[in-house]
Length: 68
Ligand code: SF4
Image (tube, rainbow, N blue to C red; front, side, top):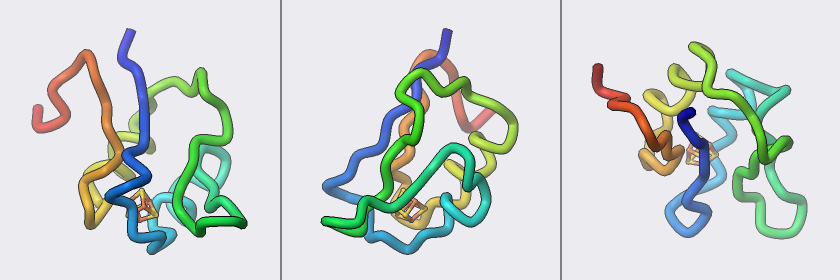
């Protein structure tokens, strides 16, 4: 099963992922970087789209080729 993670070091806090998938991504109040609201989040089509639009390419989907 594909796993989802955010490289918070590279995240610039633009909030694009949060706007596209507010039920999946949120900005942490302390650092204003994106975080997963549910660590066991499934990789849905909307999540893949948010990852594709992330300007820092820091939404990481392992176990599958996100360029496919
Ligand atoms: S779209 Fe990418 S850079 Fe922007 S907040 Fe989300 S994870 Fe961070």
